[in-house]
Amino acid sequence: MLDQMGETSERSEPVKTDTVKIYGFSFDFPITDRLEFNPKFRREAGDLAVKSPTRSVVFVSWGELDKAVKKLPTPADHANFSIEKIAKETRGKLSSREQKEIPVSGHMAAYNHVKVETPGGAFGGGRREQEIESLHIHCENTSRYFVVYATYGPDNSDDARRRTIRTIIESFKCH
Image (cartoon, one colour):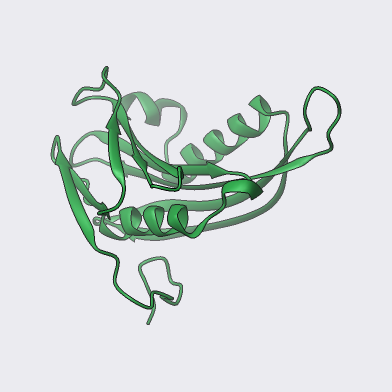
């Protein structure tokens, strides 16, 4: 069975979920996860974290579309900017990248899964690999953009994070 992202579903049993609906958008998340809202969020812009019991975190952010499209006219441009920014801030090198457009809530969204090699610690502990999985949506109906993303290293690339981000992406409704 193919899922929304065009991949075969490997779920042996359905994930029990709950739904969050706020400011007109919504998504499902595993019932075992908890939500943490940024206290400064508002309708126009904000973010929240979906945290699994294993400490994996998936972030959902939103902001004003008209501000974003001035510099980043498409979801793919927005995704490329975000990934390049992370690579630059971590002094990392992109080592592999999966990019595709997927339909989300009536829009074509930019999905990316990238690996970034980052320099080791202060004592030259070698390079570390960090992975980033993200979805960028531009919604003209609500005049907002949405970003769903998770970053993780080899020490926390668990199934819970992957299950959480998949559940959110597959159920996301921006309007």
